[in-house]
Image (cartoon, rainbow, N blue to C red; front, top):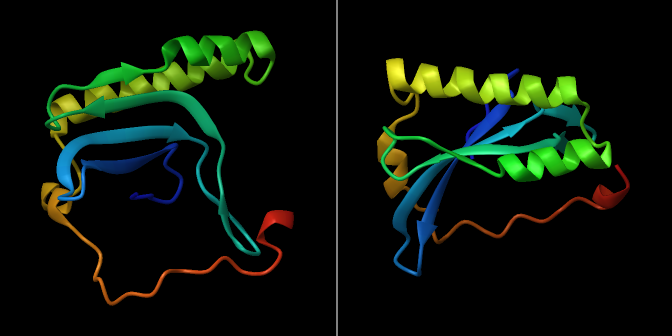
Length: 125
């Protein structure tokens, strides 16, 4: 995932299978990251964008956002702001293309890297 300070979304890349074949770009709409004593927190905004090629973008989970409004998780105004952010991102990507390097789709972690460990008390933060 790529996160930029103050952005209300993160860029994800998805791969498929053990060979890690590129599957899609995914923009996860979320509250901007905020630092905590054990890392970072955010709040998923349910509505997301995805693209198999970085040119044509599709919305995902619009019905889930509506369900969250009915449940009281988001107000109608918050949902409208989330949809507006999705529209802004769609327009920006159509006009300017990707701001991240598409070569990231071929990235793989160094197999020598150790598995990260969560710090004690992470679940209490």
